Image (cartoon, rainbow, N blue to C red):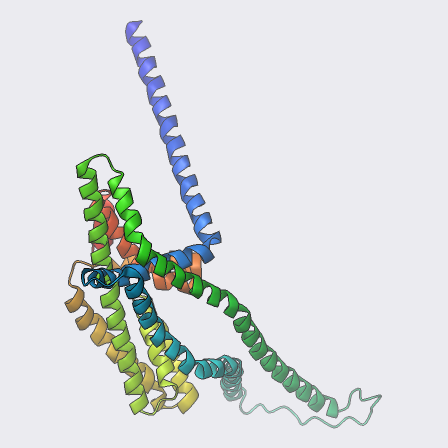
Length: 385
């Protein structure tokens, strides 16, 4: 009896443990879904906060350097933010006209591409049906208010062409209206981000020092200071280095394309720099965009391959030689993890999420590495093959 009762008791304990584990797993999945829901529906706020945080981390070492030279944080923060705004303002003014031109040109390019595909299809069908020409159509002599008249076919073709033209104009207008509608929100986000950067640079260190002073144990204070300093230095170094490399890649692309006579070379250089923040996927998108630019300028000729070939060559030099040499192996990331991470953040936050995905992954990796938690995830993120 005692053995039977002990077996029943162990079985009951195992069942209770299994129920507890299942409840814990269910709560974990609910927490993950809640986090995804919050990230998706709060993207406007969170995008601004994360972009602001990353830019503040990039500038904060310079503010600290000025502070050691007895320059007030307010003065150095205003100076550095102004220096940050100036090049972007210049690029915005220079790129306004090319962006507007391409926004109006894209619907026409779509129509032209469809016409070329239809002509190729017609040529293929014509070769297949060659030698079986249909009998000529006799002109109908019976007309009743234009019905069954040969002119109705021509009228239908003219009406279809007019409809296509109206569609193109309507598409261009819709693109322009959507851009104008998004401008106030974008400007508000940029202004909010700049204000937050200033406040983080000026008052952020004081808030962190107050938090550290509130800790009871000296070991916890040292751990918090070491964690914050390491993340700030490493992430700032990573963001600054990647930004300089991408800016150099964009400038090189723009200069080479300008020397080769490619139109809107500055626009393609800026796009090359921005897309290089997206590993693996960005280069593919850049090749596709520059292929479209080459076909638009040169038509279906060999010269159309020149812009994507230039971009591919420069991107290959950057990705295979420059970036690994400068960053070393401390910032290595698994390609599969990076692509999955890009897909998740692209689904959550669109194009801006894709741009912020890799810096955010590096930030998370540095944080959990310094905290000494989840070592298996660090191994997964860093494993190269």
